Length: 99
Image (cartoon, rainbow, N blue to C red; front, side, top):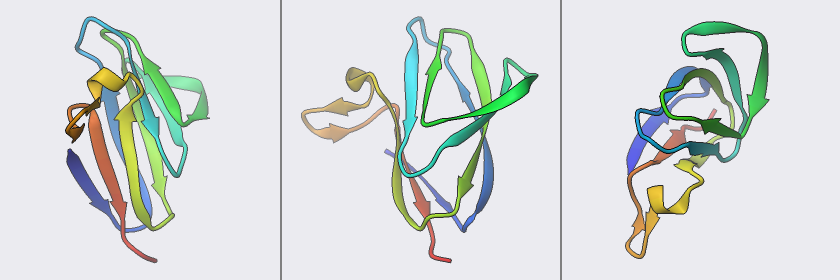
């Protein structure tokens, strides 16, 4: 499982899918603000806690890390992120330090 440590601040992330099947990125504890799709600025950015990413798509999102704690980012398709041995693959921990 990957880990990313942030002080309380905004972070920009690019979420992409180079696979043949759709994936659904889910964030706990906060919403992602989706600002771009496939490199193009969206006319109306929107907030999401689950982002469905079709094969070949990529999105730019802003994460406002303003709540201290350890938050999960993972694929909602469980075989992509979980096994009998725990979380793996398309799973990350976002660690936000205290204010």
